[in-house]
Length: 388
Image (tube, rainbow, N blue to C red; front, side):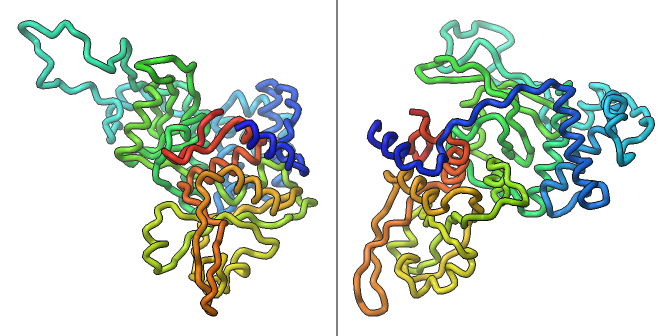
C-alpha cells in the first residue's frame, strides 16, 4: 500500500495531487452577492437573461435567478447590484401551504403513517427479547422547512437528465452515498444534503443522513438503510460528466484542452469478451475520441472490434496521458491482460482494459481531479473505492 502511494505521488509531475490552499470562508451575504454577480456576468456576455437550455451552466443560472426573484429579502439585499434590472421591485405574496396541503399532495406515500403490522399484537404478551439489528430510533419523514434552498438543485438536476447531461446508473456501492449526490428510489428523486457522525453499530460503521426529497420532505434514515433500498429498487444519478473536470479545474476561455480521457465499452462478439461484466477501456487521445476509435475494428488495442463511447472528459492544464496513467495505477487490481489475434494471425496482449463498474470509474476521476485519491484504494471485491 505504501509503495503504491509513494509511486503515485512521485509520478505526479504535473501537481495533480497537490493540496490546494483553503480559500477564505465567505459570509452568507458574500456568497449571495457572488452568486448573483455570476448571473450579471452572463448577461454582460450574452445580452440576455439566462434560460433553460442544453447548456447546464445557463440552466443552473436560470433556476438560481428564479429562486432569488421569489425571495423578497434577497431582492432587497441585491437591489444595489441589480445593474441589469433582473429583479422585480416587489414580489406577489404566495398562498400559504399548510401541512394538510402537503399530506393531501403526497401521491407517492412518502408521508403516509405506518400501516398496522399483522404481528403487532394489541392484546396479550409481547416478546421481551429485542430483535437483532434493531435501533432505539426510527427515521421519520417530515416537511423540509428550508426546501427553498434545495429546490433549484432539483430543477437543475431534472434539466440535466432531460438534456442528457446526467444519466441514471445502477447503484453499486454504499460509498457513493455522500453529500451532493442525487439518487432515484421508486421514481422519487432524492438528494443527500449531509452525512452525520459515524458510529459503530452491530460491528459496522453507520451514520445518519439528511435526505431531501423532491416533493419537499426530508428524512434522517441510516446510510445502510438507504443502501439496501438502492440495491433493491434504486438508481444513482451521475455527475455532469461533460463539465466535471472543467469546473474542478476552474477552466476559463483562455485555457486550452490538453486532450481527452475516455471510457469505452467493447462491442466484440467474442464469447470470452462478452461474458466479462463491467469491462471498460480507459484511455486518452489528443484528437477527438470519435476520430480515435473510427478504425477500432482493425486495432488490437480495441480488441479488433467496434467500441461504444461511454464517457469522455476534457483535460485542461495537465498532461492527459499522465492523467490516464494515474487512473491505470489506481485500478491496477482490476487490470486484465487480454489476448487478441490480429488479421495476420499474430497474438497480442492488451492491457488497457479494466473490469470495474462504471460509476466507480467516475468516482475515481473525481477523486483524482480533487487530489483526494491518495486517501483511497480500489478493492476489486466488491468493486468499490474504500478509504485507506
